[in-house]
Image (cartoon, rainbow, N blue to C red):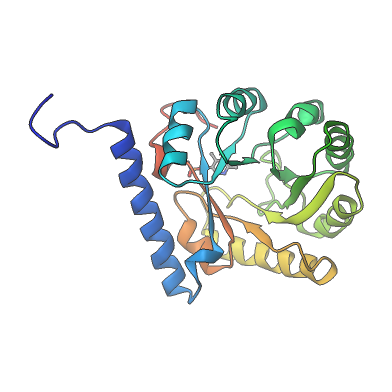
Length: 238
Ligand SMILES: *Cc1c(COP(=O)(O)O)cnc(C)c1O
């Protein structure tokens, strides 16, 4: 042990990061004249161990996000004693639907009709109810997931009509290398159209470490924060 205060534990580091992220959320809410209580912080813990999830839960985090089924399933099992809400935020293959339906509470990445069908039968089979978000693509480049904005209403209707699924809202990732603000504004338009048909679909999942301020300015209710909370993920690009 060094002098008092010299030992900086992982818990201290996560606590400091969490404080900074909460300050950023508070400042963004103040600028947008919104109540910070409207914003759910989802800690995206991908690539980090279950011990970090446990520390974050001790520090008051209630919502955790993961983007790969295998990693998420293991961590959710290890943290089964914690009162956490688990969010699946990654691209999802239909053959992983059964596994995801066992531990996820919210699936952010519903972007095609076949996935709706797969999640519905998986949730029904597991005796669970899954909150689903329609992932909307905000760029014209395919491959990063997401339905085109004009496909979103039909997907939303399909989710709302499916046993075991509950339509909760929309999700998007800002386009790479472009100003996120106009993209998030387009997402807000899609969300508004969806709410006209489905008033309870109020979730707007948008904003990550680099753009949470712009997302909150455009109405985000859920921000998905990895790097700013947990640190860099090294050379692993995902
Ligand atoms: C990794 C990831 C995040 C978190 O990104 P950071 O920039 O590390 O905050 C958010 N959303 C999705 C879909 C992700 O895959």
